[in-house]
Image (cartoon, rainbow, N blue to C red; front, side, top):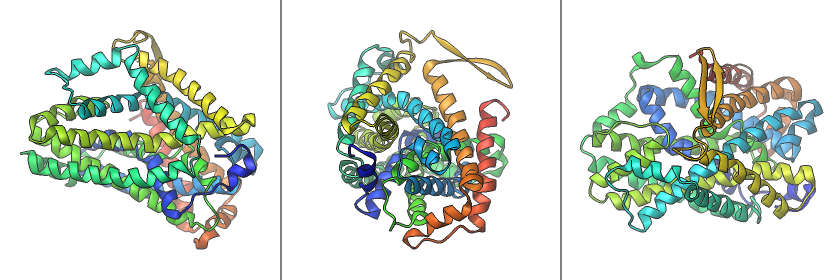
Length: 457
């Protein structure tokens, strides 16, 4: 990371593999390892798995490709990337950046939860007979979650201060393969130890199309947005530092393949484990902090595998944190024309301040009684600060930004200009399939998510 715009644009990733590891790492996060398995389980197992894979092709790959192309063409932060092409459309970058900053508020705090549990396994701590009581006492504490959350933000910020194309690239080349190995080890353990694991595996892999409905489609679209990382400005930000000799179509495909492989592999670990233990598949943080800790306690070698599992989560946490914190940092640095470290400090303090409100609204925290209204077709609902931010950023801003980006590429920037960017590095120009996915698939799928958020599905 450098102190001016021009130098920053010239700071390219050292290799194609390094870029793919950073870009895939940015997408591979908690959404892959805890959200994907419970959504898959609840939406019909193998049926949802097929839907997700199809949507990863129709929505994920073209979404990554067009965002990366915009980023490389503009060589700018997420806001200015659109403005360099057409000043009237900078607002899309604002939407993307605000969305990511809001997600940062709670992502960094929950990442602290992961570090807390990894430390507990590392030091041999026990969670007691009542795992829910342990978890609720921790998240309701006004100080301890913030300490761990601040630690995640601070470490991420310090590493980013040395540049996302320097230290982060080197780190991701190590932690992404390590994450893969840890998940494979956990998956083998789950299949060998859990007595009912085979039935869980059948549920996961064998489709039952009688379970296919509108909610399955909406959840599939939403999971692709979260898992692959479209609409966060992740690939616009990273694309600004990818050289012209790289084939964007190829690297975008590999990013989606790597990301989806980790999500699917996480399902191999979690679904057989839960099914084999006779437990219910919980949703959200409860899945890893309650269900999985209980399961690891039941079987031989559980404490060691628990450590491996939470270490894999720690790797996933930081691989994503690097980029989703860099997105607002890059905007602050270039908009205020300040040095890298100043931008890092300012942005980190803003994110941590937002994280304080998200943290204190959890469990029985100090702000847990503060409820914010959410209006949809079913009426008025009330969410705590954490849940409201999650819903608004993930189910409105994220698909909305993706929809607008597809429109921008198709009708403002134009397919001819997109072709010129794709042809660099020996890539193929825009074809009919690209037009179909960008003009038809992305709009339909993102609208499904938005309608689902307002109670249509």
